[in-house]
Image 1 (spheres, helix red, strand yellow):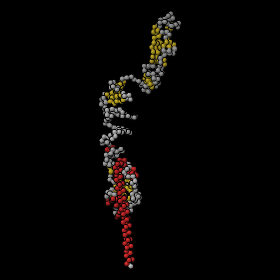
Image 2 (cartoon, rainbow, N blue to C red):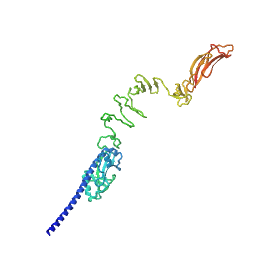
Image 3 (cartoon, rainbow, N blue to C red):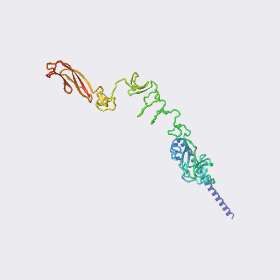
Image 4 (cartoon, one colour):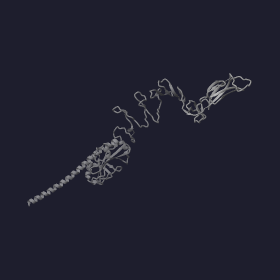
Length: 432
């Protein structure tokens, strides 16, 4: 009987030990879950804070006081802020994400959240995870959690009352989820970067505070392209101060300078053959100077007077007796003959008049006179003028020319016989 009683007592004690074992086992599993979730939250918080610091300007260009920018775990991984293989969810299947608001211009408020998955029903564990995540760690409570009537799922709370955040303008993941409140971050994020986008209220972030070099450590030179306008107090090109190769090139644009350019200041332009010309503003006169700097080859003064040291060549763009738009305009005959035309009463006319003399001769009866080569639009003409003659009893003298060019001069008496010794002056013309 004693043996049976002892056996029963032993069984009872064993059952008590098994119950305590399972209780310890469950507590241990909870602790492991808590530690895993909290440590993952800490890693995520650090990555999120660094991402906002490095990308504050681009985030500020999108975020508003009421509409946050959402950054996913995949974005943090692809950008190198989290390692490859980092789980997008915690041990409760909740998905991590980062949301950023801009309550005031240039100030960012960042919140890490776990959304979806299984809500953490154990309120003690919920608080423990937040506490182990550090001062940034927090949670979304259940209404009246742990008998505290002030607890509401409309807010997120830091562990042990460290902070409270209304979720009005953030995504509210619901009770039983984790939240981290990252520190308010200025867009400049305490760095000295030059930002490539505009930051509202912070023009200093787009201004250089030191010299900018375009030569890398290997000595390679780099370009600046796509600029619409570059404003500068001065321009120094190359070591010699000249504009050569490399050069300044403008396409469909212009070069403008303000204030007075010092006397003698010039712009040198070198051709492919190595010969240069120089552009200069001298006492209000724009001039072009030759390569050895010995002669002004072209100038225009303040009155509009033009002086060219060489010849003038007009474009061959006009035809005689055709319409022209601006009286006084000059051009070359379109046939390339070199004849110069002027717009006279809106009609192109040869300079010198409508009758242009091309030849002058002294002729006798039977002399041949060549036809002039008239520029396009001209008609060959001949004029015979008596010079000296004698008359016979017929008292008749006839002067003229046969043909349409070349011509034959005749000087005849009344019997149509040539008068010996008689002469005439002959002019050949082109008429327009």
